[in-house]
Amino acid sequence: MPVMEISIVPVGTKTASVSYYVANAIKILEKQKGIKYTLTAMGTIVEANSLKQLLDAAGKMHDSAFRENVKRVVTTIKIDDRKDKKLTMNAKIKSVQKKL
Image 1: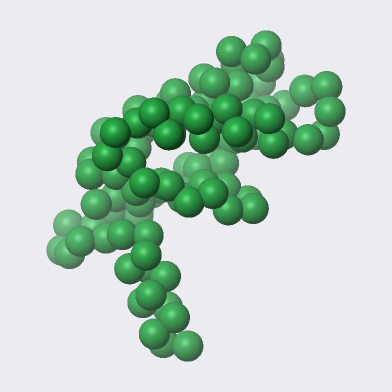
Image 2 (image 1 turned 90 degrees about the vertical axis):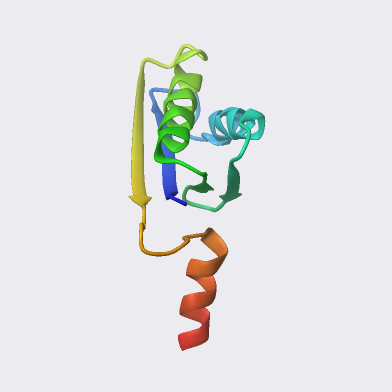
């Protein structure tokens, strides 16, 4: 199961706050089947059954800011994908916590 961290930053908005645009991007995730996500202070962690699902969701999230008349959007994506064992958001956290 691939895991992605995504951060979408609209540039040139009327205010310094971007929470409105983040909320719109999260609403996109809520409509996607087979996707789990965790919102964090600096980005959103997304888990899906396939890389294609993650990339499709990322594209829709990125485009959501443009639908709000933003002229520029900077999206940062990190992907962790393993083929040797099942990968989940929770398992990654538990692995580190176990070692602390």
